Image 1 (cartoon, rainbow, N blue to C red):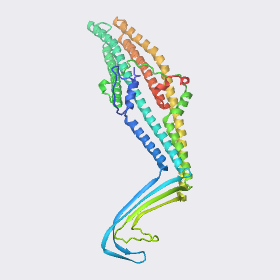
Image 2 (cartoon, rainbow, N blue to C red):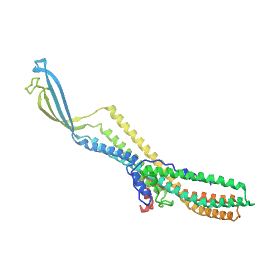
Image 3 (cartoon, rainbow, N blue to C red):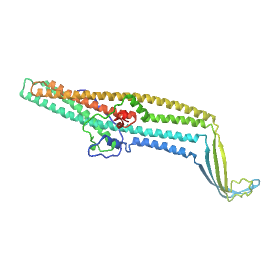
Image 4 (cartoon, rainbow, N blue to C red):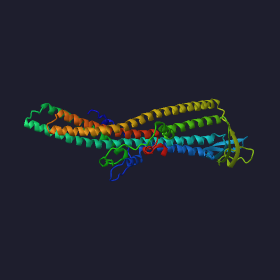
Length: 451
Protein backbone atom coordinates (compact mmCIF):
# COMPACT_ATOMS: atom_id res chain seq x y z
CA UNK A 1 0.00 0.00 0.00
CA UNK A 2 2.89 2.31 0.68
CA UNK A 3 4.80 1.46 -2.50
CA UNK A 4 3.48 4.46 -4.40
CA UNK A 5 6.57 6.68 -4.40
CA UNK A 6 6.47 6.51 -8.18
CA UNK A 7 3.68 9.07 -8.10
CA UNK A 8 6.15 11.70 -6.90
CA UNK A 9 9.15 10.87 -9.07
CA UNK A 10 8.27 13.14 -11.95
CA UNK A 11 9.37 16.74 -11.36
CA UNK A 12 9.89 18.49 -14.69
CA UNK A 13 11.39 21.73 -15.99
CA UNK A 14 10.93 23.20 -19.48
CA UNK A 15 10.86 26.24 -21.81
CA UNK A 16 8.29 27.78 -24.18
CA UNK A 17 7.53 27.21 -27.88
CA UNK A 18 4.57 27.92 -30.23
CA UNK A 19 1.90 25.35 -30.87
CA UNK A 20 -1.36 23.81 -32.11
CA UNK A 21 -2.91 20.41 -31.45
CA UNK A 22 -5.37 18.10 -33.10
CA UNK A 23 -8.85 17.37 -31.79
CA UNK A 24 -7.84 13.81 -30.92
CA UNK A 25 -5.57 14.96 -28.12
CA UNK A 26 -1.90 15.77 -27.89
CA UNK A 27 0.32 12.97 -29.19
CA UNK A 28 3.91 12.54 -28.08
CA UNK A 29 5.14 13.20 -31.63
CA UNK A 30 3.15 16.44 -31.91
CA UNK A 31 4.25 17.63 -28.47
CA UNK A 32 7.89 16.98 -29.38
CA UNK A 33 7.57 18.82 -32.69
CA UNK A 34 5.99 21.83 -30.99
CA UNK A 35 8.58 21.89 -28.23
CA UNK A 36 11.49 21.87 -30.68
CA UNK A 37 10.04 24.81 -32.62
CA UNK A 38 11.65 28.07 -31.47
CA UNK A 39 12.66 26.58 -28.13
CA UNK A 40 15.12 28.96 -26.40
CA UNK A 41 17.59 26.17 -25.57
CA UNK A 42 17.65 25.05 -29.19
CA UNK A 43 17.75 28.63 -30.44
CA UNK A 44 20.75 29.36 -28.20
CA UNK A 45 22.64 26.36 -29.57
CA UNK A 46 21.74 27.36 -33.13
CA UNK A 47 23.09 30.82 -32.39
CA UNK A 48 26.36 29.18 -31.39
CA UNK A 49 26.36 27.24 -34.67
CA UNK A 50 25.81 30.48 -36.61
CA UNK A 51 28.83 31.92 -34.84
CA UNK A 52 31.01 28.97 -35.88
CA UNK A 53 29.77 29.27 -39.46
CA UNK A 54 30.64 32.98 -39.48
CA UNK A 55 34.19 32.11 -38.40
CA UNK A 56 34.38 29.56 -41.23
CA UNK A 57 33.36 32.20 -43.78
CA UNK A 58 35.96 34.52 -42.30
CA UNK A 59 38.62 31.83 -42.75
CA UNK A 60 37.62 31.36 -46.41
CA UNK A 61 37.79 35.11 -47.04
CA UNK A 62 41.29 35.31 -45.55
CA UNK A 63 42.66 34.69 -49.08
CA UNK A 64 41.00 37.74 -50.64
CA UNK A 65 42.90 41.08 -50.75
CA UNK A 66 42.82 43.06 -47.53
CA UNK A 67 42.43 46.81 -48.04
CA UNK A 68 42.97 49.78 -45.72
CA UNK A 69 41.90 53.39 -46.38
CA UNK A 70 43.38 56.26 -44.34
CA UNK A 71 42.33 59.91 -44.43
CA UNK A 72 43.53 62.89 -42.39
CA UNK A 73 42.63 66.60 -42.44
CA UNK A 74 44.33 69.43 -40.52
CA UNK A 75 45.65 73.02 -40.84
CA UNK A 76 49.22 74.06 -41.73
CA UNK A 77 50.95 77.50 -41.85
CA UNK A 78 52.08 78.87 -45.20
CA UNK A 79 55.44 77.39 -46.24
CA UNK A 80 57.58 78.40 -49.21
CA UNK A 81 60.96 77.30 -50.52
CA UNK A 82 62.47 73.85 -50.71
CA UNK A 83 63.97 71.20 -48.46
CA UNK A 84 67.22 73.19 -48.11
CA UNK A 85 65.89 76.72 -47.81
CA UNK A 86 62.33 77.42 -46.71
CA UNK A 87 60.29 80.02 -44.88
CA UNK A 88 57.23 79.59 -42.67
CA UNK A 89 54.59 82.33 -42.36
CA UNK A 90 52.53 81.68 -39.22
CA UNK A 91 50.19 84.51 -40.03
CA UNK A 92 48.64 82.54 -42.86
CA UNK A 93 47.10 79.09 -42.41
CA UNK A 94 45.48 76.68 -44.86
CA UNK A 95 44.08 73.16 -45.15
CA UNK A 96 46.13 69.98 -45.42
CA UNK A 97 44.42 66.79 -46.68
CA UNK A 98 46.17 63.43 -46.72
CA UNK A 99 44.73 60.11 -48.00
CA UNK A 100 46.15 56.67 -48.74
CA UNK A 101 44.68 53.33 -49.84
CA UNK A 102 46.70 50.15 -49.32
CA UNK A 103 45.84 46.68 -50.66
CA UNK A 104 47.57 43.50 -49.45
CA UNK A 105 47.10 40.19 -51.26
CA UNK A 106 48.28 36.99 -49.50
CA UNK A 107 50.19 34.76 -51.91
CA UNK A 108 51.57 31.91 -49.83
CA UNK A 109 51.33 31.28 -46.10
CA UNK A 110 52.94 27.84 -45.87
CA UNK A 111 49.58 26.29 -44.95
CA UNK A 112 48.55 28.67 -42.18
CA UNK A 113 45.45 30.02 -43.94
CA UNK A 114 44.45 26.60 -45.27
CA UNK A 115 44.60 25.04 -41.83
CA UNK A 116 42.71 28.02 -40.40
CA UNK A 117 39.77 26.98 -42.60
CA UNK A 118 40.07 23.38 -41.34
CA UNK A 119 40.05 24.69 -37.77
CA UNK A 120 36.87 26.67 -38.44
CA UNK A 121 35.22 23.60 -40.02
CA UNK A 122 35.84 21.65 -36.80
CA UNK A 123 34.11 24.46 -34.96
CA UNK A 124 31.02 23.97 -37.13
CA UNK A 125 30.96 20.29 -36.13
CA UNK A 126 31.03 21.37 -32.49
CA UNK A 127 28.12 23.75 -33.11
CA UNK A 128 26.05 21.06 -34.82
CA UNK A 129 26.68 18.68 -31.91
CA UNK A 130 25.52 21.35 -29.46
CA UNK A 131 22.26 21.76 -31.39
CA UNK A 132 21.68 18.00 -31.27
CA UNK A 133 22.38 17.96 -27.52
CA UNK A 134 19.75 20.64 -26.92
CA UNK A 135 17.22 18.85 -29.12
CA UNK A 136 17.85 15.54 -27.34
CA UNK A 137 17.28 17.16 -23.96
CA UNK A 138 14.00 18.70 -25.14
CA UNK A 139 12.79 15.36 -26.54
CA UNK A 140 13.43 13.67 -23.21
CA UNK A 141 11.71 16.43 -21.23
CA UNK A 142 8.61 16.16 -23.45
CA UNK A 143 8.54 12.36 -23.21
CA UNK A 144 8.86 12.49 -19.42
CA UNK A 145 5.99 14.96 -19.05
CA UNK A 146 3.75 13.25 -21.62
CA UNK A 147 4.18 9.72 -20.21
CA UNK A 148 3.64 11.06 -16.70
CA UNK A 149 0.37 12.69 -17.71
CA UNK A 150 -0.90 9.45 -19.26
CA UNK A 151 0.24 7.57 -16.15
CA UNK A 152 -1.57 9.87 -13.71
CA UNK A 153 -4.78 9.87 -15.75
CA UNK A 154 -4.84 6.09 -15.60
CA UNK A 155 -3.99 6.13 -11.90
CA UNK A 156 -7.10 8.23 -11.38
CA UNK A 157 -9.13 5.46 -13.01
CA UNK A 158 -7.64 3.02 -10.49
CA UNK A 159 -8.76 5.21 -7.61
CA UNK A 160 -12.27 5.42 -9.01
CA UNK A 161 -12.46 1.65 -9.37
CA UNK A 162 -11.10 1.15 -5.87
CA UNK A 163 -13.62 3.65 -4.57
CA UNK A 164 -16.40 1.36 -5.75
CA UNK A 165 -15.08 -1.44 -3.54
CA UNK A 166 -14.66 1.00 -0.68
CA UNK A 167 -18.21 2.30 -1.04
CA UNK A 168 -19.55 -1.22 -0.69
CA UNK A 169 -17.58 -1.61 2.53
CA UNK A 170 -18.97 1.68 3.85
CA UNK A 171 -22.56 0.65 3.16
CA UNK A 172 -22.11 -2.72 4.79
CA UNK A 173 -20.51 -1.13 7.85
CA UNK A 174 -23.38 1.38 8.12
CA UNK A 175 -25.93 -1.45 7.90
CA UNK A 176 -24.15 -3.38 10.65
CA UNK A 177 -24.10 -0.29 12.86
CA UNK A 178 -27.79 0.44 12.23
CA UNK A 179 -28.79 -3.17 12.90
CA UNK A 180 -26.50 -3.32 15.94
CA UNK A 181 -25.20 -6.59 14.54
CA UNK A 182 -22.88 -8.74 16.62
CA UNK A 183 -20.28 -8.56 13.84
CA UNK A 184 -20.16 -4.76 14.05
CA UNK A 185 -16.90 -3.46 15.53
CA UNK A 186 -16.37 0.25 16.28
CA UNK A 187 -12.69 -0.24 15.45
CA UNK A 188 -13.73 -0.97 11.86
CA UNK A 189 -14.97 2.62 11.51
CA UNK A 190 -11.61 3.94 12.74
CA UNK A 191 -9.76 1.51 10.48
CA UNK A 192 -11.81 2.66 7.50
CA UNK A 193 -11.12 6.33 8.24
CA UNK A 194 -7.36 5.72 8.43
CA UNK A 195 -7.45 3.84 5.16
CA UNK A 196 -9.50 6.58 3.48
CA UNK A 197 -6.91 9.15 4.62
CA UNK A 198 -4.11 7.06 3.12
CA UNK A 199 -5.99 6.78 -0.17
CA UNK A 200 -6.64 10.54 -0.18
CA UNK A 201 -2.92 11.17 0.34
CA UNK A 202 -2.01 8.88 -2.57
CA UNK A 203 -4.60 10.60 -4.71
CA UNK A 204 -3.17 14.03 -3.91
CA UNK A 205 0.29 12.82 -4.94
CA UNK A 206 -1.10 11.65 -8.25
CA UNK A 207 -2.95 14.93 -8.76
CA UNK A 208 0.19 16.93 -8.02
CA UNK A 209 2.25 14.84 -10.46
CA UNK A 210 -0.41 15.38 -13.14
CA UNK A 211 -0.46 19.12 -12.48
CA UNK A 212 3.33 19.35 -12.80
CA UNK A 213 3.35 17.26 -15.97
CA UNK A 214 0.59 19.30 -17.58
CA UNK A 215 2.25 22.58 -16.65
CA UNK A 216 5.56 21.32 -18.03
CA UNK A 217 3.92 20.46 -21.34
CA UNK A 218 2.30 23.90 -21.31
CA UNK A 219 5.72 25.53 -20.93
CA UNK A 220 7.29 23.27 -23.54
CA UNK A 221 4.58 23.54 -26.22
CA UNK A 222 2.95 26.87 -25.29
CA UNK A 223 -0.46 25.19 -25.42
CA UNK A 224 -3.06 26.34 -22.86
CA UNK A 225 -3.06 24.03 -19.84
CA UNK A 226 -6.77 23.26 -20.09
CA UNK A 227 -6.29 22.05 -23.68
CA UNK A 228 -3.49 19.62 -22.89
CA UNK A 229 -4.94 16.12 -22.93
CA UNK A 230 -2.77 13.21 -24.10
CA UNK A 231 -4.08 11.35 -27.11
CA UNK A 232 -3.34 8.01 -25.42
CA UNK A 233 -5.88 6.86 -22.84
CA UNK A 234 -3.89 3.83 -21.71
CA UNK A 235 -0.23 3.69 -20.75
CA UNK A 236 1.39 1.00 -22.88
CA UNK A 237 5.05 -0.05 -23.11
CA UNK A 238 7.10 1.91 -25.64
CA UNK A 239 8.47 0.14 -28.68
CA UNK A 240 12.01 -1.09 -28.18
CA UNK A 241 13.94 -3.38 -30.52
CA UNK A 242 16.07 -6.35 -29.51
CA UNK A 243 19.10 -4.23 -28.69
CA UNK A 244 22.02 -5.47 -26.65
CA UNK A 245 24.23 -3.27 -24.52
CA UNK A 246 27.27 -3.57 -26.87
CA UNK A 247 25.06 -2.57 -29.82
CA UNK A 248 23.81 0.46 -27.93
CA UNK A 249 27.38 1.40 -27.02
CA UNK A 250 28.36 1.22 -30.69
CA UNK A 251 25.36 3.38 -31.63
CA UNK A 252 26.24 5.94 -28.98
CA UNK A 253 29.85 6.02 -30.16
CA UNK A 254 28.59 7.01 -33.61
CA UNK A 255 25.67 9.29 -32.73
CA UNK A 256 26.06 10.74 -29.23
CA UNK A 257 26.45 14.52 -29.72
CA UNK A 258 28.66 15.26 -26.70
CA UNK A 259 31.16 12.68 -27.98
CA UNK A 260 30.94 14.24 -31.45
CA UNK A 261 31.63 17.67 -29.96
CA UNK A 262 34.70 16.40 -28.09
CA UNK A 263 35.99 14.60 -31.17
CA UNK A 264 35.62 17.80 -33.18
CA UNK A 265 37.37 19.69 -30.40
CA UNK A 266 40.24 17.22 -30.48
CA UNK A 267 40.56 17.66 -34.26
CA UNK A 268 40.57 21.41 -33.78
CA UNK A 269 43.39 21.24 -31.22
CA UNK A 270 45.48 19.09 -33.58
CA UNK A 271 44.94 21.61 -36.37
CA UNK A 272 45.86 24.41 -33.98
CA UNK A 273 49.15 22.64 -33.23
CA UNK A 274 49.85 22.43 -36.96
CA UNK A 275 49.14 26.16 -37.34
CA UNK A 276 51.46 26.99 -34.44
CA UNK A 277 54.24 25.02 -36.10
CA UNK A 278 53.62 26.73 -39.45
CA UNK A 279 53.95 30.12 -37.78
CA UNK A 280 57.70 29.57 -37.84
CA UNK A 281 57.50 30.01 -41.63
CA UNK A 282 57.20 33.45 -43.34
CA UNK A 283 54.21 34.89 -45.21
CA UNK A 284 54.59 35.93 -48.84
CA UNK A 285 52.32 38.71 -50.06
CA UNK A 286 51.88 41.43 -52.68
CA UNK A 287 51.14 45.01 -51.69
CA UNK A 288 49.96 48.02 -53.65
CA UNK A 289 49.15 51.55 -52.55
CA UNK A 290 47.72 54.82 -53.87
CA UNK A 291 48.07 58.13 -52.05
CA UNK A 292 46.98 61.71 -52.60
CA UNK A 293 48.10 64.75 -50.52
CA UNK A 294 47.00 68.36 -50.94
CA UNK A 295 48.23 71.52 -49.13
CA UNK A 296 47.57 74.69 -51.20
CA UNK A 297 49.57 76.96 -48.81
CA UNK A 298 52.66 74.78 -48.99
CA UNK A 299 54.86 75.30 -52.06
CA UNK A 300 54.77 72.31 -54.37
CA UNK A 301 58.11 70.63 -55.06
CA UNK A 302 58.26 69.90 -58.76
CA UNK A 303 61.60 68.12 -58.85
CA UNK A 304 61.27 64.29 -58.94
CA UNK A 305 64.16 64.01 -56.47
CA UNK A 306 62.25 65.70 -53.68
CA UNK A 307 59.99 63.78 -51.28
CA UNK A 308 56.98 66.05 -51.01
CA UNK A 309 54.57 64.77 -48.29
CA UNK A 310 52.29 67.78 -48.71
CA UNK A 311 51.40 67.83 -52.40
CA UNK A 312 51.17 64.47 -54.17
CA UNK A 313 48.69 64.49 -57.02
CA UNK A 314 48.66 60.69 -57.41
CA UNK A 315 51.33 58.47 -55.96
CA UNK A 316 51.20 54.75 -56.64
CA UNK A 317 53.38 51.76 -55.85
CA UNK A 318 53.42 47.97 -55.80
CA UNK A 319 55.78 45.36 -54.38
CA UNK A 320 56.24 41.79 -53.25
CA UNK A 321 56.75 41.35 -49.52
CA UNK A 322 57.94 38.69 -47.12
CA UNK A 323 56.93 38.90 -43.46
CA UNK A 324 58.69 36.70 -40.96
CA UNK A 325 57.67 37.00 -37.31
CA UNK A 326 60.53 35.72 -35.17
CA UNK A 327 58.84 36.01 -31.78
CA UNK A 328 60.50 32.88 -30.39
CA UNK A 329 58.84 33.05 -26.98
CA UNK A 330 55.34 33.33 -28.42
CA UNK A 331 55.99 30.54 -30.96
CA UNK A 332 57.28 28.11 -28.32
CA UNK A 333 54.45 28.97 -25.91
CA UNK A 334 51.81 28.56 -28.64
CA UNK A 335 53.12 25.11 -29.56
CA UNK A 336 53.22 23.97 -25.94
CA UNK A 337 49.72 25.32 -25.35
CA UNK A 338 48.36 23.43 -28.37
CA UNK A 339 49.98 20.17 -27.21
CA UNK A 340 48.49 20.64 -23.74
CA UNK A 341 45.09 21.30 -25.33
CA UNK A 342 45.33 18.03 -27.26
CA UNK A 343 46.07 16.10 -24.06
CA UNK A 344 43.15 17.79 -22.30
CA UNK A 345 40.69 17.11 -25.13
CA UNK A 346 41.84 13.50 -25.45
CA UNK A 347 41.35 13.01 -21.71
CA UNK A 348 37.91 14.62 -21.83
CA UNK A 349 36.91 12.40 -24.74
CA UNK A 350 38.07 9.20 -23.05
CA UNK A 351 36.37 10.27 -19.81
CA UNK A 352 33.12 11.00 -21.63
CA UNK A 353 33.31 7.62 -23.38
CA UNK A 354 33.61 5.93 -20.00
CA UNK A 355 30.76 8.01 -18.57
CA UNK A 356 28.60 7.20 -21.61
CA UNK A 357 29.17 3.47 -21.17
CA UNK A 358 28.26 3.62 -17.48
CA UNK A 359 25.19 5.73 -18.28
CA UNK A 360 24.07 3.31 -20.99
CA UNK A 361 24.57 0.31 -18.73
CA UNK A 362 22.44 1.97 -16.04
CA UNK A 363 19.66 2.93 -18.49
CA UNK A 364 19.72 -0.43 -20.24
CA UNK A 365 19.52 -2.34 -16.95
CA UNK A 366 16.66 -0.13 -15.79
CA UNK A 367 14.76 -0.75 -19.03
CA UNK A 368 15.39 -4.50 -18.88
CA UNK A 369 14.28 -4.74 -15.26
CA UNK A 370 11.20 -2.60 -15.89
CA UNK A 371 10.18 -4.76 -18.86
CA UNK A 372 10.44 -7.86 -16.67
CA UNK A 373 8.43 -6.19 -13.92
CA UNK A 374 5.68 -5.33 -16.40
CA UNK A 375 5.00 -9.05 -16.92
CA UNK A 376 5.22 -9.81 -13.21
CA UNK A 377 2.89 -7.03 -12.09
CA UNK A 378 0.42 -7.63 -14.91
CA UNK A 379 -0.34 -11.03 -13.38
CA UNK A 380 -0.20 -9.62 -9.85
CA UNK A 381 -2.68 -6.79 -10.37
CA UNK A 382 -5.20 -9.15 -11.99
CA UNK A 383 -4.90 -11.35 -8.92
CA UNK A 384 -5.22 -8.26 -6.71
CA UNK A 385 -8.43 -7.23 -8.43
CA UNK A 386 -9.90 -10.70 -7.95
CA UNK A 387 -8.79 -10.63 -4.33
CA UNK A 388 -10.51 -7.28 -3.70
CA UNK A 389 -13.72 -8.36 -5.44
CA UNK A 390 -13.87 -11.64 -3.54
CA UNK A 391 -13.24 -10.05 -0.13
CA UNK A 392 -15.80 -7.32 -0.82
CA UNK A 393 -18.49 -9.82 -1.81
CA UNK A 394 -17.79 -11.93 1.27
CA UNK A 395 -17.98 -8.85 3.49
CA UNK A 396 -21.33 -7.82 1.98
CA UNK A 397 -22.69 -11.26 2.83
CA UNK A 398 -21.32 -11.09 6.37
CA UNK A 399 -18.70 -13.78 5.75
CA UNK A 400 -15.60 -11.59 6.12
CA UNK A 401 -14.46 -8.79 8.40
CA UNK A 402 -13.49 -5.29 7.25
CA UNK A 403 -9.81 -5.84 7.92
CA UNK A 404 -9.67 -8.52 5.24
CA UNK A 405 -11.60 -6.28 2.82
CA UNK A 406 -9.13 -3.44 3.34
CA UNK A 407 -6.23 -5.83 2.80
CA UNK A 408 -7.76 -6.99 -0.49
CA UNK A 409 -8.38 -3.44 -1.71
CA UNK A 410 -4.84 -2.51 -0.67
CA UNK A 411 -3.40 -5.33 -2.76
CA UNK A 412 -5.49 -4.17 -5.70
CA UNK A 413 -4.19 -0.60 -5.42
CA UNK A 414 -0.55 -1.52 -4.85
CA UNK A 415 -0.26 -4.13 -7.61
CA UNK A 416 -2.06 -2.03 -10.24
CA UNK A 417 0.03 1.02 -9.34
CA UNK A 418 3.17 -1.09 -9.47
CA UNK A 419 2.16 -2.40 -12.89
CA UNK A 420 1.60 1.08 -14.31
CA UNK A 421 4.75 2.35 -12.66
CA UNK A 422 6.74 -0.46 -14.30
CA UNK A 423 5.42 0.64 -17.70
CA UNK A 424 6.22 4.26 -16.90
CA UNK A 425 9.75 3.45 -15.80
CA UNK A 426 10.29 1.32 -18.89
CA UNK A 427 9.10 4.11 -21.19
CA UNK A 428 11.24 6.70 -19.41
CA UNK A 429 14.23 4.34 -19.56
CA UNK A 430 13.78 3.94 -23.32
CA UNK A 431 13.55 7.73 -23.70
CA UNK A 432 16.68 8.13 -21.57
CA UNK A 433 18.46 5.45 -23.62
CA UNK A 434 17.62 7.35 -26.80
CA UNK A 435 19.03 10.53 -25.30
CA UNK A 436 22.16 8.68 -24.15
CA UNK A 437 22.64 7.24 -27.65
CA UNK A 438 22.07 10.62 -29.29
CA UNK A 439 19.09 9.53 -31.40
CA UNK A 440 15.29 10.04 -31.33
CA UNK A 441 13.47 7.27 -29.45
CA UNK A 442 11.82 6.16 -32.71
CA UNK A 443 15.21 4.93 -33.95
CA UNK A 444 15.27 2.36 -31.16
CA UNK A 445 11.94 0.84 -32.25
CA UNK A 446 13.46 -1.52 -34.82
CA UNK A 447 15.97 -4.27 -34.16
CA UNK A 448 19.60 -3.18 -34.74
CA UNK A 449 20.02 -5.57 -37.69
CA UNK A 450 17.10 -3.83 -39.40
CA UNK A 451 18.74 -0.43 -39.19
